Length: 345
Ligand SMILES: Cc1cc2nc3c(=O)[nH]c(=O)nc-3n(C[C@H](O)[C@H](O)[C@H](O)COP(=O)(O)OP(=O)(O)OC[C@H]3O[C@@H](n4cnc5c(N)ncnc54)[C@H](O)[C@@H]3O)c2cc1C
Image (tube, rainbow, N blue to C red; front, side, top):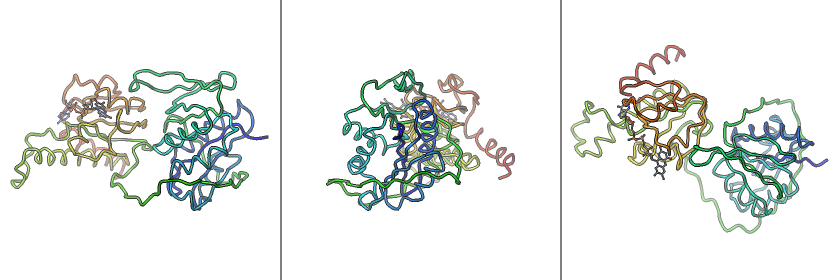
């Protein structure tokens, strides 16, 4: 019997995005309703390790497209291989990432079906998936269904679903896919590593800084920094160091508001919000962030939110489970120290 539920395993140079395993967990649940098992699709070059992981996390069948033409992710090449593999699937799941947003759209065009992106919950209506996804910067949740066309393509928000436990003894049927990547116009020239540390979207804990990290007038920059804008950046560096210190003790990723990114305190890849990353960690600590709707859009589904802000009326406190009204320059160092001692670091 051909499986009805397929999962695309997203990886970069064989490092699997953990949300791929969450998608396998969802796929197993869906297969209980739809019947059959779960097929995973792994594309790339020298992907045997990824194939093993897909089996360990719940795939019954792993379809492997292993070819030099797939060494680097290129949407068109990957879609040319993936679309025929999943053409008869009932449901196709992707973990949500920059790559899969592109790929899901291309596959949907090839197969003349739709995409439901950034899903955080679902239920079944017969064989149709009623998917829940946030809209309007997370202010509303909407239910979306793809009734007529197949496959139903969903991208699942990272960390919205629990990840299954790996079982390294589990094996799957391996099927070699025919790889015809087609004549693709683009070529990947290379990669440049960002200096940003722990990945934001996969992090269980995020400590974020906002414009407030530069607001400590009593901090006097060295005499050689006379330009006012440079003085502000210098102050922000001192503030962000406190954010980073706390993040390091907690093993957390560092995030930021757009104001902090626009002011060049940190690079754009740290931005959380409507025009940055959408995150859903267990713990989100916001220091010197007011809580504008566009920032909340990126972190409102965090399980526990802690805010540190000088202004007791800052909107971020409305969403926070715990709040500290105070200057982050006074609050963060003792908090970091106390956690260091508590965690034995
Ligand atoms: C189309 C569009 C898209 C956008 N996308 C995003 C996005 O993706 N992400 C995003 O974040 N924003 C986004 N914005 C910008 C957003 O509207 C806000 O301007 C931004 O989030 C504000 O950042 P902030 O909270 O750091 O700064 P502010 O709003 O200036 O807040 C700074 C906060 O720090 C507090 N503070 C100051 N000094 C201290 C101190 N020493 N200790 C403690 N607290 C202190 C203040 O009380 C204040 O609450 C977008 C805007 C638009 C129009």
